Structures are given as C-alpha cells and as structure tokens.
Image (tube, rainbow, N blue to C red; front, side):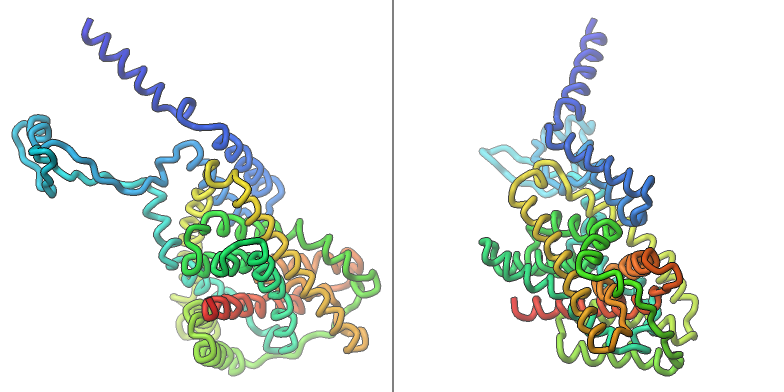
Length: 412
C-alpha cells in the first residue's frame, strides 16, 4: 500500500511540476511567435542561420524556463545532509542560523544560462566580427570610396531614434542601446547594450537579429516608395580592379584610424579587420577558414539560441518591451530611408550614374541588404546587376555601425 501511495504521490508531483500547470498564457503566446519564426526560417528561408536558432531558443525557454535559470545556493541542515548521505560529511561552506548548522549547497544553473554568458560579457560579438571580416571582400568599398558616404547615411536611424527614445522618457543609456538597433547589426547591438543598458539586452538582441533576418520584407517597400522606376533601372559601370596591396593595407589603416579616434569601437572594428587581414594576406588560410566556418558556426548557434532564450512571455509581453521593438523597427526603417535618400543625391550629382537602390545596403546586414538591392533592381531591369555595387555600402555599413557604437559609448 505504501508503495502505491508513493508512486501516486510521485505522479501527482510530476503533474504539478509539468509545463501544463506552471506555464502562463504569456508563454504560449511566445511559443506561437516561435512557430511563426520557424515558418519564416524554414518555408520562406528568411536568414535561417539566424532565425532557426533564435526561434528554438524562444521555444525552449517558454516550454522550460529553468533552462535559463541562474545558479542558486540551497541551505541544507548539516544533520539532515549527513543522514541522507549515510554519515558522510559534505565539503560545503557552513552557516549557523538560530543555533542550527546549515550547508550552503550550490545548485547548477540551466544550460542556456552558461551559454548566455558569452552574450552578457560581450564575448560573442567580437568573435562574430572576426568571422564576418574573414568572409568579407572589401574590394567594392575600396574601388568606390564614395560608398562610405552611403554607409554613413544609413546610420541616420540610430541617432534619430536615440533622440526620439530620450524624448519618450528612456534614460540616455537605454536610448543609445535602442537606437543601435537601426544599424541592423546584431553583434553591435549586443555589444553596446551590455555596456549601456544590460537590463534591456533581451528585447534589443531579439529585435536586432529579427530585423536583420527580415530585411527582405522590411526594405523593399521603403526602397520603392522613395525611388522612381527610372532611378531603379539605372545600370552602373563596372568597378575598377583592386590590387592585393590595397586589400592588405585597408584593414591595417582602418584599425589604426578607428582605434585612435574611437577607442570604444576598437574591439569590434579591430576583430573585423583582423579577420579580413587573415583573408587577404593569404598566409594564414587555415585560421582564416576556421574563422569563416567552424568558429562562426559555433558562435552563431550559441548566440542564436541564447538570444532567443531571453524572449520569455513575462519579459516580452509588456508595453515597454513592445515599445522598444517598435522603436527598433523605426530606427531600421529610417536607416534604410537615409541610405536611399543619400543614394538619390548621388544619382543627381553623378548625372544619373548611381542607382539609389544601393543606398539601402548601407545598413549593416551583410550580405542580405546587398542582395535585396540586387533583387529590387533586377525586378525593374532584368539586365541590371547591382550586387557588387551594393556590397560597397553594405560593408561600409558594418564599419559605420561599429563607429556609431563607439560614438554612443564615448558620449554615454
């Protein structure tokens, strides 16, 4: 009889601890959101390398919140511990409360809590930049230095949203972290937020990576609204060849200049340029390939699932968080518009030789934004190939968002 009683008690305990009873309606809303992201990643193939791990992290934490639980310490009476362990004393710290000795027994945190430390401590973003640098050809930017202007113009959304967020009542540090979403650069957004507003890291990281993945949905309507059919049909001249010496000197010069002007941006820009120098030097192919592939893939998995795991229902389903996500969308939209509008200026001053669509690639989402410029331009003119021209502003945007981050960190 006692055995059946114990079994029944165990079954009841399992039921009470199950997610069906412990999870709230907010968790199920976020599970539904995760399923939408799965659909976009798998069916629509919207940047699945980002959306798939983010969605799975979001799913896991709302099914089992303990996967992100912090380590704790349990007070266990010394006498009880010894009795349970057949007279064997523990090696834990002892504290005395009301004349009773207690062991301070540490309890492990959840798996994602430990993986998340790479985000929280700002370790993953520079490593991601290392891989991005190793995969990036700065040739189009070197061949057309005017692309720097488009990359700078696309950072407009960061600073306008920064000012807007302050006017809406956010602290300056929080406003800076929110504004950086406009760069469409997840690693930079995480890097800035960990230093300025760690309390907002979850929603800002999810917003930044989500907007990066949704570039093919968000950008085209803005691009078409701000340009004419004639402008979108412009065929640009082929870029000049870039020498190997130029490609080797470029990352070294950029690192020196940025590190001297904006030391706060040195770690991001420095790792980006280190990766690129490894690529262009041609003498360290093994570590260049590792940075591009194995390291980049591992960090992407860890970063994606842990960023998604910050999206719990109780944290996300409130007006403050929704406001942050909307401000991030506004920042990204203004950044896209800023790049396109500056592209229109270049179109005018060049006598119609610059296609304004490449300005939208000035945001930092590499190479998605450049592909969108190519796709929208080719829809108007099937013989138009804008990809290499758009890559110039696109990689300029990577540098531009890191520089913008350095400016915000310097002033805040």
